[in-house]
Length: 182
Image 1 (cartoon, rainbow, N blue to C red):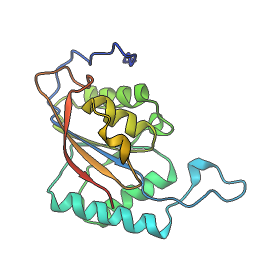
Image 2: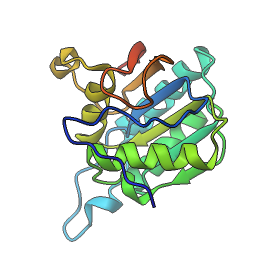
Image 3: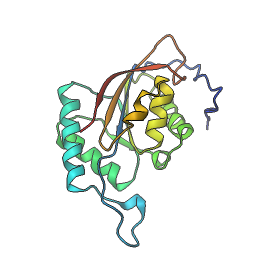
Image 4: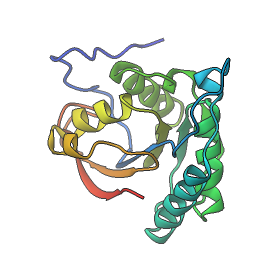
């Protein structure tokens, strides 16, 4: 298995892929864990179900389609995926990627690269996961701290356009072209 160096000197992978867009989505609002319930098993609240549905509607209205969907296997991300689809957003079969639960920046980058190695002709990829990893990924790829004020609230979606003249997943290699907070 290939790993990606995510130290501050990481400059992106030299491999060439067709990827042009990344869509980063944080899971929708979840209930507090019940006594004895694992964080992994937390479910969406009514608010979260509505958020996921609304974000799915927005993505459908924007006509965003993806070739690959990577999703954390946690219950709340699975339910977010269901809500996005109930909102009208069409997705390919989701790949439930264990590394996306409690993921570090390095784990997110590695999961994306591995998915692209399996499907190098993919032009767009969605990641449905958790904070703080998604915020770190967004800041890393856009090389901006401006989102620190807002972050990635529940059910937020960020659409990134990758710069084809830079190494894939390098710091600052993407620009935000759309951002939605429910």
